[in-house]
Image 1 (cartoon, rainbow, N blue to C red):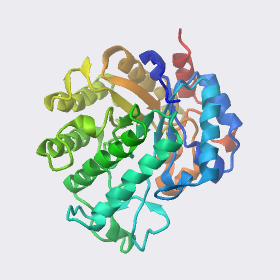
Image 2: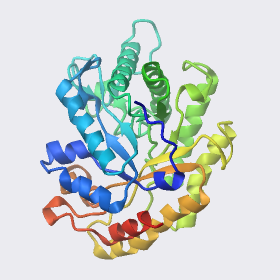
Image 3: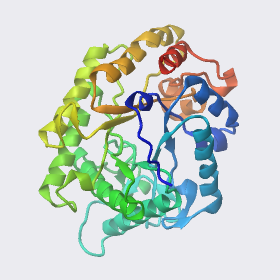
Image 4: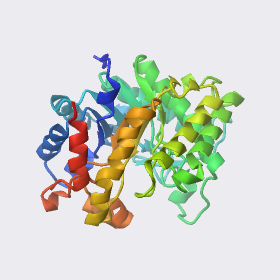
Length: 370
């Protein structure tokens, strides 16, 4: 049955991210250590990566073994005391020779003419979400993409053929993202009407302090208000707002709060909230810091990072969840993200025995406060 629990906000703020499938299936680590550390930290809410190709054979057909793998994962998380799970995928199927039979993060240029490749892409996207929601009716919270305002996670189909071809502009990405939200929302709600649809987490891209997330939200609301994207009502696109407010590790907490407040002011401006206390809620489905492998930075973050988590609890009522990114360092991430991406964990990599870091100790203390 779908999750009908009334969740306490302070519980929800004890959140965590980890790519369990990749940790287990790609990096070949057992999951007992994951569950042990989640229990140790007293984690209550969890963001799970469940990409479409993990559980679908094609855009409308369940892969039984893949789906059963995740049914077991969610049962195990529940046994760990995790009662709020948000599921996310940022891959989709595409009817194009370069992507047929596999998933990607590419989309055709926006073309609303009947029979266009773009409309076929949206039809497939909607059907995938409907199929997945029907398979997992007890999962209530669905984040329908990841950082689609970022070139890494949404790019033109032509780049599957020529990686040097032009990317979408910011406005073009948001136009496509707006269509994708409407279609994913419709697919999920047609399957399980009581589901809660979370906006794809917006990336700061250029940097939090540049206002890139604010601009992305402004484009989204203007698209919806235009009536050219299926509805003029934001409630037909997402139930929960979402962004990833990454920032320099030494940014003061109050400055970080101001940037987030400024983002939410855009929500108020477009009448999706009346005030910081009354309106659509926000999930920060990723937020964390890399220590770059530097123990001094890790020690500094033991207080500076936790101060930001505490500030959300006390002074940022529009935020209901922080999923701390991430449980473990991932040394394999060096190959695509360098030292920055490698050292986000609260625990060291498995090859170093999953030893808790200083900021892990601080988070453990914070999450276990009475």
